[in-house]
Length: 380
Image (cartoon, rainbow, N blue to C red; front, side, top):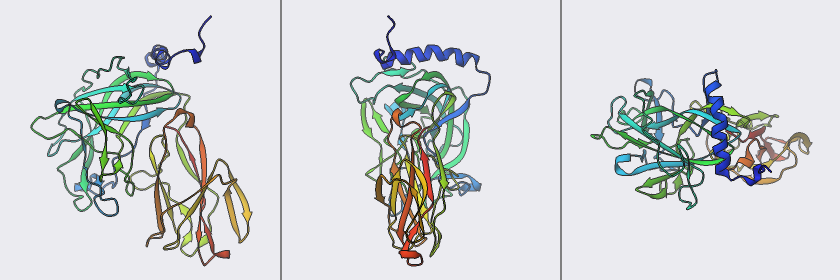
């Protein structure tokens, strides 16, 4: 009798996926596409020296972040690791990472080494599933080419600084992963006359926490923190093909009330990322505009959207509300932002939630302001 899928270990299923998708990798004719992006490092497109993009360290109140980048120098025994969730099945061909060396001019990286774990590397049962079992890093994936990301890591006050030029390093890496949660770990070599290599963290203005990456220092793993308390994420991208899977998305539905300062509305993105999507394992920046100074938005969340008239001329857009939480009070720009952590877990692939905010607004019936609806679907 053949064993059922439930009888197979996860590592056996990964091995079979690698074998099966080898045929896909050989036969696929379309060019590989970007299938995963853990999060951006860019916070201010075009704001830097000669119009370069900028990744700002938010070293101002209220966050007071402190770390430009994290050491991933192979020669000093450092590497960076972070978790990610696969929805569907990935056949990947290339990996892309972001890195700089202080005072480096042009590409200075000459080595990229990667391994992927089936469990957190701090778990005694963890083992690598790529490039192979046994825990070893890959051979040097560096191929002599680099995509120069025309961006700099700076402070808020020093956006024209050029001492930390960020490069996007895209390297060939062929493999496959079935649905599940994994940990990717990377380290670099570069110009030994310069410090680093350093990895800039995922950066979103207004969000201190952007992930839960760890740094490996000669075999000892510790959480990557900035500002003393905020965990950060490793920015990386994956290229290839996906079988099945669920794509993260964010969209607006319904219409909020036209109150004292305009229609209460969710903001989906900014100049750096026009539409931010709720990627599994990321922190999603809920941003609400056109509220009333000092009033606190109360957000209802549920698993269904609707359009139900309620007293005072309002419309309920979440039916039924399963959870209520609050966001910070509206500021002088009539905006409120809250960064919401999204857990990892393949069981969440494709799950959708619906949100609507309510607050006090004396210009409206019963003094009740409300936003339009926000639909968030979780995935890659």
